[in-house]
Amino acid sequence: MILSNKAKQIKPSSTLAITAKANQMRSEGIDVIGFGAGEPDFDTPNHIKEAAITAINAGFTKYTPVAGTVELKTAICKKFKEDNGLEYKPNQIVVSNGAKHSLTNAFMAILNKGDEVIIPAPFWLSYPDMVALADGVPVIIKTTKETNYKVTKEQLQKALTSKTKALILNSPSNPTGMLYTKDELQMIADFAIENDILVVSDEIYEKLIYDDAQHFSIAQLGEEISKRTIVINGVSKSYAMTGWRIGYTASTEEIAKLMSNIQSHAASNPNSIAQKAAVAAIVGPQQCIGEMRTEFDKRRKYMVERINAIPNISCITPKGAFYLFIDISSTFGKSYNGKVINAASDFAAGILEEQVAVIPCEDFGFDTHIRISYAISQENIQKGLDRLEKFVKSLS
Ligand code: PMP
Ligand code: GLU
Image (cartoon, rainbow, N blue to C red):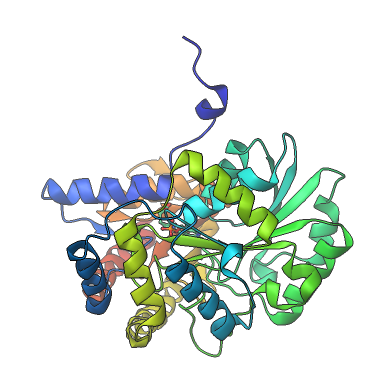
């Protein structure tokens, strides 16, 4: 039987796989520290849970409109206005089963076979597979540490072809934690407008930013770029709601309609109860975000200092999200237990023997780096970093 060739090219998500592996080891009684976490370690705030319980008790348990309830879409429009100064009407919003689903819908709605999508590396690992699933061709641009892993105008120009349809922007970035400034976004907006391409702007970590960082949406930079942008966002990270599966997009009505049509066949509406919870998250008290951010910030500072004190590894200070993107290339050629490290995956395999799980960044387009998350407890961070330090210092 010949199954789908397209499906066969899709790799499983390694972030999810590594997190699952660490959890499995833990359930077998192995004291592993998992730095893979791509989700807040905090519980969903109570007022959000209460809204869901109320929804269940009130019988809000049936199909809703495909693209989400008017109540939720209106709340999302209000959020865009207040947080980003963006004016959208409810029919420009599509609510889906997590931002992952929103992204998948977006690529299916805009790509034709062979259309190219520029993806600056390091990138969140799902983007190339999502593009490929929609018959598009990922075009990877490798950024450098010198530009804080942000794409330059020259790099964009070089990647441009007659088939370029869109580019993906992820600010704050997973895995680097970097944010594009307003000027940098203006450069990207000019490039998109000049060359008639769309921007898929993944802003899921918008609210998890530190120090003096400011988040801007590229769609804020005028009508011309706004109509070319599909903003991706959701409640997963900001409100510790990864399991609830609510993500959303803001785009032109035309694109929103296409995405909604696709979703009407693939998934219908997102979970009705989770939609009620998302309304409570978006319009309810926001101090839960501040509390989470304060804790992430403490961990971030502690980890950056410790990592940069270890010889042969280093990281830049992230300004957002909850990851450290660590350059481990100076360990290449060194060995542990007789095994030589030549790539991030070798490093990750080695440190797993010391009961620490990290994400090797080959699947993020950077085989010289690993990603570690600070969405784990301070106690585990300390323990895990002690082991990491010991491992790196033992390399010979
Ligand atoms: N975009 C980025 C950059 C992410 O890190 C994630 C986390 N999985 C997502 C999108 C998807 O989020 P969700 O859990 O809402 O699908
Ligand atoms: N976005 C998270 C991460 O990068 C969650 C895992 C996933 O969805 O792949 O780890």
